[in-house]
Image 1 (cartoon, helix red, strand yellow):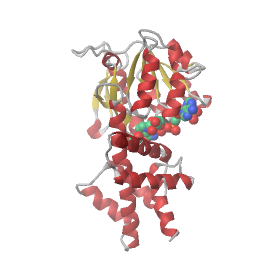
Image 2 (image 1 turned 120 degrees about the horizontal axis):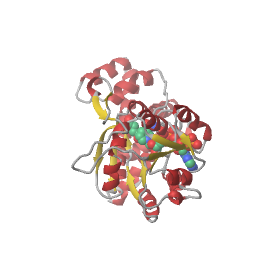
Image 3 (image 1 turned 60 degrees about the horizontal axis):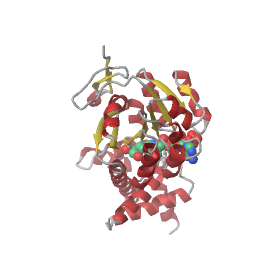
Image 4 (image 1 turned 30 degrees about the horizontal axis):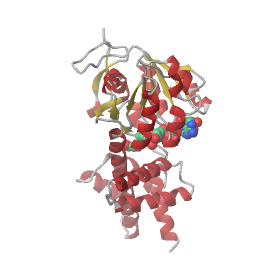
Length: 324
Ligand SMILES: NC(=O)C1=CN([C@@H]2O[C@H](COP(=O)(O)OP(=O)(O)OC[C@H]3O[C@@H](n4cnc5c(N)ncnc54)[C@H](OP(=O)(O)O)[C@@H]3O)[C@@H](O)[C@H]2O)C=CC1
Ligand SMILES: O=CCCC(=O)O
């Protein structure tokens, strides 16, 4: 019988089917009983794979840096020495890689996942990449007879740990239905947006808004301090008004202390702004606020902050002030 369990706390609490559930729905969704591969065990991939294992899935992992597999193996995962091996030994393989270059390399390179793909198998790329990259990966995967779904996620380290991500999917709808119960183990909601590229586009639009919001927030924190206000009070005032956002309440207090524990690496936020600018250019849209924000993230990277949380962009503003 399907297993029901409570997921999340407070307002996020809900009941979800476990991995071995055998439910079915009019859309063709059902439980997933096959073998699941997971490639890329960074900040996001590791907790996502952990949740699949904890839900009872038969998970096989691979990561470029082998040692990052160890915690997952302790939870019961299996290991294969290459993406091709994972893909050939699993029914469906997820990939959570850093950027377009690594996503292509892992899917299409030597010993890449495509080499282990075959009809009946599926590849779900949950990395944040641009539409052209996603289409390229999709082409390699589908040329083997396998199916392809892009499924970038909104939500950071904590939502990944809590299984509360938001999936922005596009591509093969039957694969979407086939992996729905797996997405529900890792996330709180999922959108199917159409042809390959639409999930990538949606993700880049969301993240360009987020990246600009963070810069605007940083400017406000610094200005409040400069005019003699307590920036902690600013965080509190914002949290009670119409521009309240979990991101401000979560990151504000540590930003005031100049602490940037990494949830979303700054280098990835800058990558997303770069890709969003290219997306806007492809349709001749001007996004001047995003362009200005991108310059600040580039400055922050040049200050050695690439691996800090993206909220460290405030340090680029501080550096500008100091150089006056
Ligand atoms: N962190 C966040 O809040 C969120 C991140 N994202 C997106 O998810 C993706 C992953 O992010 P995150 O987990 O934070 O990033 P991490 O930097 O923590 O992890 C990146 C992963 O990519 C692997 N990788 C990098 N380059 C290569 C390569 N050339 N070949 C093979 N593997 C490679 C890394 O392997 P290795 O361990 O060997 O370095 C690691 O497994 C990114 O696209 C990011 O934009 C999306 C939503 C939220
Ligand atoms: O891509 C990273 C998104 C982070 C978030 O949605 O909080």
